[in-house]
Structures are given as structure tokens and as C-alpha cells.
Amino acid sequence: MSVNQSGWRPEMGDASQAAQATFTGNRALMLEEALIFEIGSTETTGVDIDAAPKVASRLGNHARKGAIGLPGLSEPEAVRHYTRLSRQNYAIDLGLFPLGSCTMKHNPRLNERMARLPGFADLHPLGPIDTVQGALELIHQLAHWLVTLTNMDSVAMSPKAGAHGELCGILAIKAALEKRGEGHRKVILVPESAHGTNPATAAFAGFTVKAIPATAEGRIDTQALKDRLGPDVAGVMITNPNTCGLFERDLKEISDAVHAAGGYVYCDGANFNAIVGRVRPGDLGVDAMHINLHKTFSTPHGGGGPGSGPVVFSKALTPFAPLPFVEKQGDRFVLVEEETAGEHHADSFGRMVAFHGQMGMFTRALSYILSHGADGLKQVAEDAVLNANYVLRSLDDTLDAPFGDSGPCMHEALFSDANLAEGFSTLDVAKGLIDEGYHPMTVYFPLVVHGAMLVEPTETESKAALDQFIGALKSVGERAKAGDAALKSAPHFAPRRRLDETLAARKPVLAWKDSVAPVAEAAE
Ligand SMILES: *Cc1c(COP(=O)(O)O)cnc(C)c1O
Image (cartoon, rainbow, N blue to C red; front, top):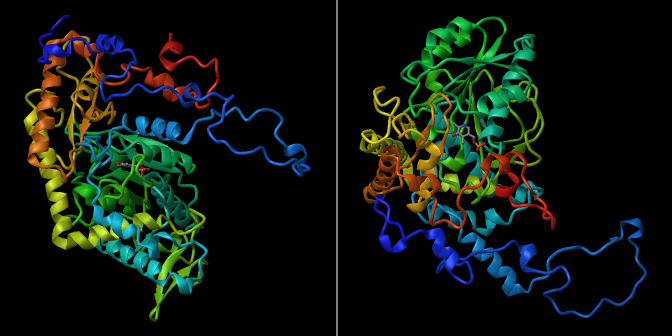
């Protein structure tokens, strides 16, 4: 049994050999699990009920022609299958989840308690308005705080994710330009330091995307942006803080220039958690910005729950904002579902969704805001930034920090693969982290940095938790710098080793067929 120099416990040996050595393929509590089709036979059924009496079918040609082809499992078999699979997941409730640009922070249980109150949880979106006054009041109150925290004019609550919010904002900009008779403005400027959803959104809405370069310090090249402004420019989409984890200090200057040139300013506010309580986008000249409730205001996401991406608007764009919105009339809350001439939303571009948005997320976000209070929210931003800087400065002697000299980072620490040994990549570091019991950080994003590793620790981690993570990443980073060959085949302790992730993403096999080859083999 070979023992490498990487500091693993020698008794572990080669984990893949150990796995082969057990009869079951299980490794203690890490259980090997086959596909449900491989466990259950289509020939059997897990339930034992009498055949239905023969009746004349009324299905006509909708009647099933062949066997249904689903595996028959008993209840305990089905429960075990899914429970076993669930244990192969990583979750924020298991440990630190350093995925950059995702804000995997702790979801307070108080929020869950509030969201499950039957008065909020058991509503029907078509319930008569008089029976849902409390829910409308909650939406109205959350809207009030979002507008207050951002110093904007109005908010559309219905968009269901960050990217959906971007589309909402861009559609409002489009409607405003068309109303002005300037629908010919077709160019949206997107800096290289913007999130990838920004150019995707602009293109989806029918605009042409022009990239604006980043400076050597990782911020927008303000002069290059100003030089590109002109009568064809509809607006800009700026992520702030940007994906290099830096605050765009020139945003006010940029907004003034864009407005002077007849354009609008969209700000990607998914990372509002880094500045909430400290900076108000309305003061920076922003016209529209989405807020990811599922990031900043801690509602579960990433398999744990749906997103919610309300969009705040400036006075200039409010008339074009989508319907519906909640309004207080006297002491009653109403849902305004139609444009009302002369009122706000007079020129609404329409609707984003069938109903009103994600009620469960609204309840959690308001619960988070009210339980933190003004001072608490400010501290959220400060601690998120402090933790990220602690990670950055603790690791910048091991990993290359490309913008380490650009001043403090915001809520994320960015590293590159610049000083890894020849033949070692960011992917090897990420896979090594899995053996250390962590979900890897975001890798190969942002694109402005070669082999990027983006770590977002969030404010909900203790110093002890950060120190352990830093120790793990330092250890894996040192191994990648020393050229430890064992790292090339990590993870050694996970249920699967290295899969062809590109093939899995490009040609996903989503339906089971007898003949489907496993992804790794299909890659050859
Ligand atoms: C997460 C994120 C988005 C997209 O949000 P979704 O809810 O995943 O659609 C957009 N921009 C930035 C900067 C983000 O971090």
C-alpha cells in the first residue's frame, strides 16, 4: 500500500482499492446506490392490491398501449433509495459551502417557522382578496423595506430568480425607450467583470451586447465605457460588487455619463448582501436592479428551494414596471392587476409570471429583515466582507490572488491557478477539496481570470469554521504547488471519482434506457 507525502492518514491507503475490497461496494456509512431502474424490476410491483374489476374503458386511443415500464419497489425500498441518495449530497446544513457568487449562507430556522404558518403557507393564488389581506400586507411591507434599503422608487415583486429579474429590468428599459420613440437603441454595454447572466439576458431581450474591458485592477475601464456611449446605446448592465469581488467605485460617474447619453443603468444586485445597509443603489444613479432574496435575505436555494428576484426601479422606469403590484388603499390592501392611466405603472410592459411571486420566499425574507433590524443588516454586510478578506489574506501566500493589490475585496475572495505546478489545474484543487469534506468553491468563473477560484464564505461562518476551511484549502493548494500526483485523481473518498462533466452538461442522459452507457465510458 503506497503512502504519499500529502499528509493523508496511512491507514486509509488507496480508497478506491478499499472500496473494491468490500462485498457490497459500500464504505461503512457511505453507501453505494444503484439506479432505481436497476434496483426495481419492471416485472414486479411493490403493492399488493386486487386487480381492478373489468369496466369498459373510456380512454379511447389515450389508453396505454404497452407496459408502463416503471420499476416496482416496496415502500421501504423506495424510501431507502432516496434517503441513500440524499446522503451523497452536500448541503449548507452540513458545512461551510464556499461557492462564490451564490451566497450559500445559513438559513435561519425562524424564517422557516414563519413561512409554514398556515395563513401564509396554505393560500391559493386565486383566493378572494378579502381573505388574503395578511399576505398582501406582508408583500407590501417587504416591498417597502426593499425600496427603503435601496433608495429606489418602486419594486416589482414577481420575478422568480436573479436572471428573471434581469429580464424584467431590461424589458422595462426596452418599454421606456420605445415610449420615447428610441427603440432603435439596440446596444447594451456589459463589462467583462459582469455576471454571465447579464449578457445572456440582454441578448435574450433582443439587444446586441458589447463588452467593456476590465482594468488591471479588476474594475470597469470607465474611460472605455464612456467612449462607447452614443445614440445606439440603450443602457449598461453592471454587476456591483462585481464578479472579481470588487466594488465598482465609479458607478455614480458611469451612471451620470450613461444618463447624459440617453441610456439607462441596470445594476446586477444579486450581491447586495455585501453592501446592504452601507450603500443605496438609488444614490448611485441606478435605474433598475434585481435583489436575490435567496442570497441576500437567506432564503434557501440550490436544490433547497425556489429563488425570488424582486426588481427595484428608479422614478424614470416605474411607469414601465410589470404588473401586478400591491397597493394600500385606505386600510385595505389591493392587488393592482391592470395599468391605470396617469398612475404608476401607466405604461407597464406586462407580466412576468401568472401570479404574484414566491410567497414562501417573501415570508422568509421579511422575517430575516425584521429579525436583523437596521443595525443587524448593516452588520451582515460588514461581516460578509470581513470574512472574505480573512480568507483572502490567509491564503494569498499559497494561492495567487490576482487582484490582491486592488484593495480589500467585498464578499468574495478570488484566486487563480497562476502558481500551481506544471500540469496542475484549478480542477485538481476543487477535487481535492471534496476529499477534505467541502463542496468546492466556484471554479473557472469569472472568465477575466485564468483558472479562477471564487470563494464566498458568507457572514454566517464562525472564525473556527473559516480556519478549518482555510487549512483545508491551504493544504490542497500546497499539494497542487508541489505537484502531488495523488491530487490528479482526487476525489479518492467520494462515491464517484472524476466524471466527464462537460459531456454530462452538453449531452445529458435524462431518461433511463437499458442500453445507456455510463457518462464516463461514453466520453471515450
Ligand atoms: C446568482 C447571480 C445571478 C443569477 O441569479 P439566479 O437567481 O441564479 O438567476 C446573477 N448575477 C449575479 C451577480 C449572481 O451572483
